[in-house]
Amino acid sequence: MSPDNLTLKPKLLEFLDQIPFDAIALQVASTTSQPASKISALLDTYANESLVSLDLVANRLEAAERILEVGAGLCLLSLFLKQQGYPVIALEPALGGYGLFDQTKDAIREHFSNISLEVLTAPAQELTVNEHGSFDLIFSNNVMEHIPDWASAISAMASVLSKDGKMVHACPNYTVPYEPHYGIPVFRHFRTLSARLFLPDDADTEIWDSLNFITCRQIKHFCRTQNLTCDFEKSLLYKAFKRVHEDPVFQKRHQGIISAVANLAVKTPFRQLIRNIPASLSTPMIFEIRHSGVM
Image (cartoon, rainbow, N blue to C red; front, side, top):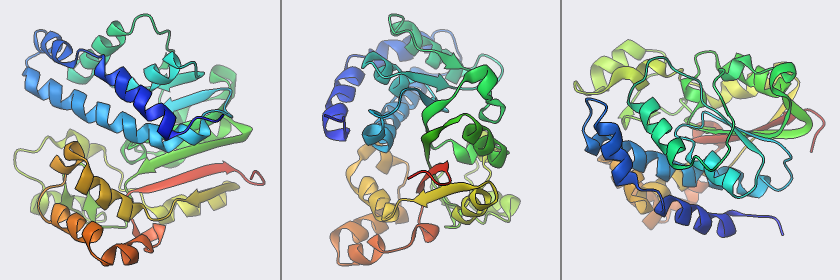
């Protein structure tokens, strides 16, 4: 029987529950200038996102003989999938230095030293068949918006995608003027003005500086020029509102008007209208790419 989120999610929750997150936070805090509370928040965020990433690929895992998670973060999902026997490889580029993120990732991997997970450190745009082989499933969650040359990255991923393979990516659609990492409005053509008007004074600008403001329209156009087929999942705006309404960790990142709108969208008849908003006008977006002619 093919795995799905109903069978794998409980196993992932059990996997996460067995990780001594508090001890790891204290361990990393002892070797950095950051408080354990900040590291705990980072761990909570990535643990929560691993559940979302699993939902993205659960029904695609069984058919894949070789899997690549792009932007694997702390490698929580890749470690879990590897433990479950799936042929997964993680790609998490080294960003330079040995900061908070790197130390937290290393502490997680040290805890799971019995799991032999291969981690590639090359950027996605440097993937080649000769060096890295081909993959039947390539996926990412909240990664594409951080790759400066996302078109080159998709092109490289397509080059290592097997003939019948599929890649699936989830990320914001900046056609909608909302930035989910900071929970603020954004005018994608006016980055500096948006930062001046909406970015909090105490915000860490590292994420902001990495954003490329990718859109659904850009993805569609690029795939047409590359002989790739691209399909977008529907009703994602409603699902995002539903997650804000039901997921406490996610809700903390989307306070104020977004939380109020989410409650309105989920609890009132407006939910049917929101379900029917086209993917091009929804955020986030989930898109599946495959070689043309592949069903």
